[in-house]
Length: 108
Image 1: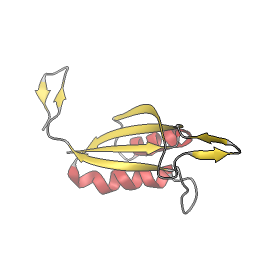
Image 2 (image 1 turned 45 degrees about the horizontal axis):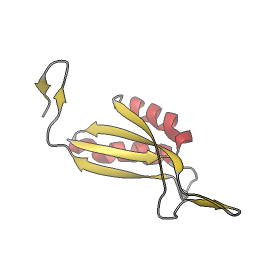
Image 3 (image 1 turned 180 degrees about the vertical axis):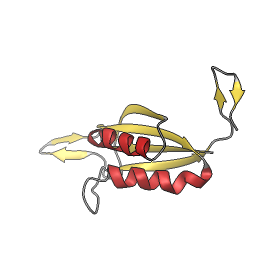
Image 4 (image 1 turned 120 degrees about the vertical axis):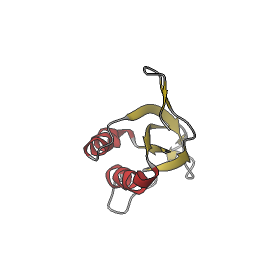
């Protein structure tokens, strides 16, 4: 199993969540976060904003579903046909173990 973490623009969050639900991935954790990418924030006049609001979506899926989940997120999180700075980033990590608390069972 894999954990996919997507950091996206807040205004794209509901669209991505809907797309994931429709693609068969209803279990998503959404966390409000702040940060900046390689462009080091955004400068407007004399003010630099280096803590930009984002949403982090966390999805756990089978290894075989990785490309499909990533494509679903990328297709719905992009802001322009070719994308723009600040559209986000996706991170993929292996999951060693998972447990369901209510049943007390190991899932992997």
